[in-house]
Image (cartoon, rainbow, N blue to C red; front, side):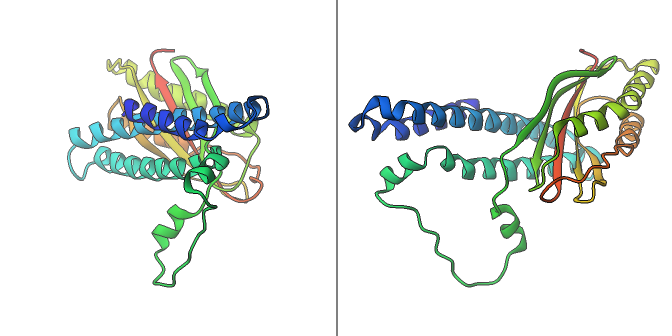
Length: 251
């Protein structure tokens, strides 16, 4: 899959440069630098989403149908499908002039009447790009944040509000892992958790999207710890959805 992402980026760069040779290089250099930076950012986000989708597929295949792990994997796959769809749609914003040259005209959207499809409408609604909140920080002994990011929603919160909220439950998350180790189940692994901050500042739907270690007791303990997330600050512009990848045992 990483090869597919690299091929996608190479094709985009070829499109970007297809009409630049006829222009003054000095005039287009700044624009091309910005477009390349945008494309590379999308490539990184796509690579992350595809890696998570591959991990969820492996969990789906290895778990028993109907089990919590199987359901979590199915939800994670659906989430990653939506994220990849959104990222591919957003890519055209990286090089609008090149896209116009390739098509020979500006893109037009034609609306046709028909029955409403709420699911299709939700997927097609433009969302702001994924925004990183933090990366590679330790929140407690044995627990590290691999990546925290906003993955959905029109609202925006200052990063420190989300960071502080996660630090406040960091001790409880670490305690869950300590109990797991004390039971003689020393494992290293990762978990992907998500939560939504509503427009009023309330945290809803804290859940474990993917769990690569532990047992049912560890899952229950981790879910309870996530239930203690409190933000108290309303996002500006609507709700905000977050995803955190946590690493246990290797920090």
